[in-house]
Image 1 (cartoon, rainbow over the protein chains, first blue to last red):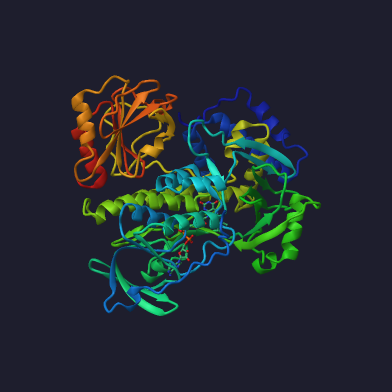
Image 2 (cartoon, chains in turn red, yellow; image 1 turned 30 degrees about the horizontal axis):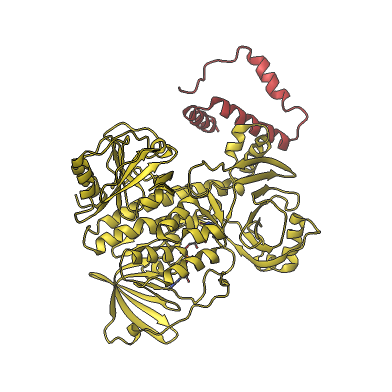
Length: 63
Length: 557
Ligand SMILES: Cc1cc2nc3c(=O)[nH]c(=O)nc-3n(C[C@H](O)[C@H](O)[C@H](O)COP(=O)(O)OP(=O)(O)OC[C@H]3O[C@@H](n4cnc5c(N)ncnc54)[C@H](O)[C@@H]3O)c2cc1C
């Protein structure tokens, strides 16, 4: 199962707003913690190591 | 009654070799009487070989070092006949607690699976371990131990090695066919040969304190990440024998080791952990650093490296001595066969490849633990803390917490000594796996499976309890003949009584666990190596096939 980069979220704007909201009023350090926890939670949900590796590579390649 | 192994002085004695006009020749010299050298020498001597063990010192392990010994190590000591004393003195534990900042993050239970003779781990000070091994070794007739005999020179010969050994009476030379270097992390043998052990040195320091107290602390492994009493660092508390508790404080790279060792620095740290009111005495304090590394090759002709000389790991995971003892276990039977002329010296290349593979596995695990315990960058620290903060609520995060992945033996699945499966099998007893234990009955008495396998090759034949066909019985018994003898063990279901056949050990599968663990059906045969690793298995017995597998496992094919 390759990494899905096609649209999968039904209401993208809702998601984006929720993502930014999750960081409201947090210091940069706290935000970093939220991000880290979020990545861990989602990574476990995905579970598939192949997908995770592909996502890691994708994320890094653009930086 | 135990001796005081911490102060025991082992006497230097002058020996004939020192006055010999031409260097005396020995089949095997083992350099270094640490746990690995002692285990290697014991194993070889108990195989009837004449062994010389040299050590530069006259003391056993000084201070606080190894403490946590794994089930597999205990099983190896059982095979050597010195396991019980170690287990009796050791502290068994199963529960570990991981704290993050001021709260318990989670608790784990090693949940030992029932039906094994030995627990997952015991804790015991290294000086006891070495003391017991030494007592066992000292009673062996073919083993000569020379204290204060320091290897200072080494020359490789066509068919052996010439050594220069320094003693209180001056230096002397001797020769050996095989040299086993068990001389520790700083291995002089390695240095004398111009070889290196390469890898990663961690820029961190740890303070070890051995504390004696009659505490009502539970017998558990406690690990703190960033506790209030030692901010930003980790702390480990472990119980050892004789009411001694071992505490490891991470100090960071910038700490001054000499300063940190001073009682006025150490005692407040311990008080902060134990509570102000608790009484204790300080047995030992030291500061250590560590590296994860290994030699590129463990065999260099007639010189073979084992234990810390060959590889080093961080202490998290207790993989140092435990893996070294497995080196000894792997090496002794092979070297014995080579020395007896029953196998080519190529067999020793499999020692190197199997144990290099195991070392890589240990280094990988130990490096990963170290990266979790001492994060190397701010983002690594954030992820570490994120994992710990989720661990209380989320089972998945608990699996990510890494306060040391405790030593388990390697499965040598890619070993050239294995005969690949031809028949279908399930379960973990694949060729290369260390044999699992199980409760058995022998002649009606409770016993353990592992007590009857290993030392030599063993064919384990499972039956349904029906009488053996005469030709099968004689073929099984016949395995004992021939240059490389194979012991035959017959396993019958609980309650079945097999007529004892000559030359066969009959074991009753007391709880049915043996058949379960080996995925066995009537007719199944497992071939185990002298070090109790599975090397072949079939659904039916065929003496020719079995002989061929023994030949593969000894490079005599
Ligand atoms: C803090 C700490 C905690 C540890 N915890 C654990 C644990 O819980 N579990 C575990 O399994 N391991 C643990 N270890 C690792 C363990 O202590 C080592 O892996 C183990 O001692 C290695 O055994 P060895 O026989 O290879 O080497 P060593 O024990 O170092 O023995 C080498 C021997 O060679 C001798 N020697 C050296 N040079 C010469 C010479 N020139 N001539 C003759 N003799 C010589 C030395 O005197 C010594 O006796 C720990 C280590 C440390 C530092």
